[in-house]
Length: 162
Length: 162
Image: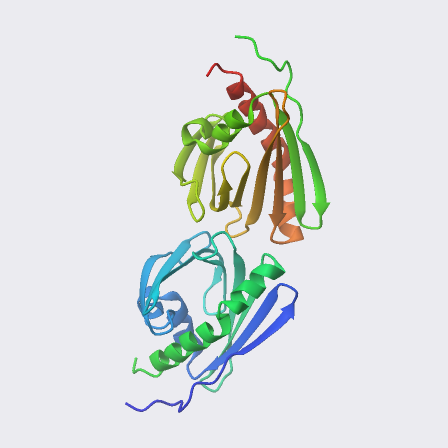
């Protein structure tokens, strides 16, 4: 099948404060479709791990619920986990995030979706790291590239018939 | 039996930065005994929950290991959890901490033990909260009273014959 997007746009990634990063990305899909792709484990498994196999060990999308994903990449497995702080359907998810490689180094990620009214949806994700060093570590670990690979996989999922 | 301490000393609790609290407390026991009381689940269960029944659901004391405790108090149950960032035997434990009542609001607690050379041990615990608001919330929730109650229970454990 043909896709609506010929090339994957890059996410706009900016450091907005000493320990804060803001990511902005537009998807060619309704807010409801993007929301489902963020919160339905069957869909999350298809894009979150940069297109690699992703095992969802826990994903309880409600305040206080836990999540834990394991990505199986060519060079090894990568575990990620956290907890949901707030879930406002279609609009907003606030959750913690940590990578097994730096256990206990936790960021708080707030993702909001805005319906652009023309079949497109703007996703904004703000990550507040615990320290400036934690932010630098995540940037150096390839955060931006990983996000763009995952969002490209999400683009491919969103153009599938539904 | 009689105890060496006739009244429980208060921990010295100070706010050392916008989002940091430092706790200092001396125990009448060797560093090894205090270390064991902090890291052996059978012992932790006897003091950590302010003297209340404490169920230790997880406690894997090593870098990346998780912990989860549930305190059964008269007015209800209180769950706490986190993950170990660093464990240096007898000297230092760095771990995350969150309370189920404010899920995803995580502090990083660094506890160090100093052998005072006279059979006493100084414990210093520094908590770095994610935000100033998180610190205020924990203080208002009765952090200091809870800690003093737990340390009093730890005093009682440390004077038992071993």
